Image (cartoon, one colour):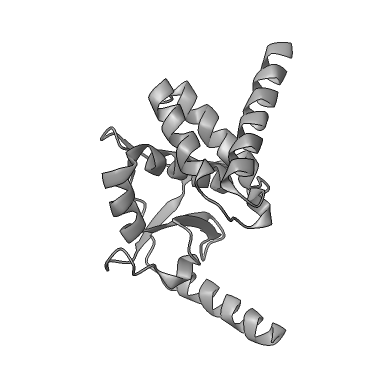
Length: 181
């Protein structure tokens, strides 16, 4: 069974790496296009983007494993952000604030591959706050969206409630540390 899972994971990675990488800019909910700038060993590049899936809402792209977006190393070792087009299309219609949050969450992973899910969420929160995006209404909407995720993998804290609470704790810790410095 373990070898079947490993073969499936290897197949997933091969499919993702074979997808055409573009470096088009991400369009935020405010219409501004942005790119995810990544610096490693003194060299800066823009993380590539690949948009997968063009079907109906129920037609989730299997390479993403149920996620709205993931970061994987490209053929050259630099990060590529893979987005589920179907999910984002629906999200923009329903919760446009979440698409921005997810972009900055994935960009945080691309910029530092050691960041876990809580730290990437924390970085996305801080980035959007610095940009002036986190109005009280958007903060409430982000909290509601996160908290309604009932079951999540342990790397997210197990539930949306825990995921959001840990995100807010990280934000507080980072802000407190900034005040001390």
